[in-house]
Image (cartoon, rainbow, N blue to C red; front, side):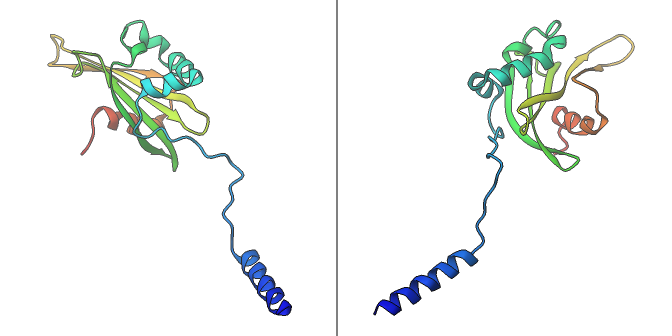
Length: 153
C-alpha cells in the first residue's frame, strides 16, 4: 500500500512539473479602456498631472479642457503595433465646433499625444478646421487622432 501511495505521489509530481505554468514577471497593467478621464484622473494624481501638463497650452483658449468637457470613454488604439488608449471630449454646448483627443500610454501611465480641434466659419470658406497638437508631434499618431475626431464607421 505504501508503495502505491509513493508511486501515485511521484506520478502526480511528474505531471505537475511537466505542466507549463503561465507566469508573468511584469505586474499586470490597469486597463483604461471604457473608462472616463474624470474617473481615472480622480483615482490617480499622476494621471491628472500628466493630462494637465499635456493640455496646458490649449487650456488657455479652451478653458473647458481642465474639466474634460463632455467626455467619451477611452478606446483602445494601435500605433506601430503598440496599444494605447484614446480619450475624447468636446466643449459643453459646442461639441460640433470644439473638441479634443488625448492618447494615454498604459505602460507608462502618461498622456503622450493629443490634439484640440476648432471649427470656425470664415468669409473665405464655409468652415475651417484648426488643430492644435498636444505633446511632441508624431505623424504615426495623426491617423488615430484624426479618426477619433472623424470616425470612418
